[in-house]
Structures are given as C-alpha cells and as structure tokens.
Length: 160
Image 1 (cartoon, rainbow, N blue to C red):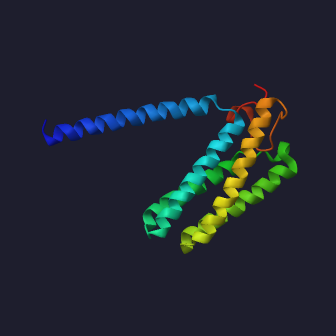
Image 2: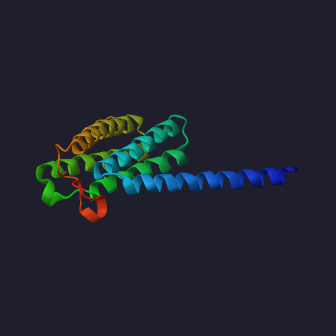
C-alpha cells in the first residue's frame, strides 16, 4: 500500500470514529435528565478551562483563547438555562455566580491570568458536584424541580 492510500484509510477511519462519537453523544444528550444536562455542561466547562490552563502554561495563546471561549460559551448557556421566575433567589444567586465566572474567564484570557482560571475551575468543580448531588436526589424522587430549568422543551421535565 502506498502512502496516500494509508492516509486516506486513516482519514476515513477517524471520520467514522468521529461520527460514532457524535451519535453516542447525541443519544446521551437526548436521554439525559435536565440535571444530567447541566452536569454535562459543567464537565465541558471544566475540560475547556483545564485545556486553557495547559495552553496558558506553555504560552500557546491560540489554544488558550479557543478553550477559554468554549468555556465562556458554556457559562453563557448555563446563564440562559436559568428560570428566574421559578428559581427565585437560588436562580438569582446562580446568575451572579455565572456572571462572575464569565468575567473571570474574560480577564484570564485578556491578561493571561492563570490564577483567575484556577479560581473559575474551583467554582465550576464545586458547582458540578452540587448538581451531581441534585441529580442523585432527583432520581431518588426527593427533588421535583430545579431553579435552573428553563422550560420543558429546553431541558425536559424532572417528573418524566
């Protein structure tokens, strides 16, 4: 087999694997509970902040920027998932936290501030653990709603 054939096969294999991964992820998202969706968002934000910190440490500003922007997008999605009416004070507090996290991410990126990024990571990991616990309670039937669910169409119904 000559080199172009080997590369073509490798590209085809990686595309097939990528397609399978996307199908798996889509199925995971479509079958997740609202709290599991929130945990998935936190997982992504933590992953992107960690990757940004690694890039920042080696002065890879392009990767730093890409990953911080991805984390910012997730924090914005978390903000958008809040239901201020139903969530009351808890939703208002989460909005303040998410706003703070977003601002820290912007500052971390602008100033190459790894300490700001570490602060964001600490908060994201703590919030993630809270949502994991909430998910456990929801599955056990001890929680019927969440201040963070926007509407049934967007995040599903806890009672379903």
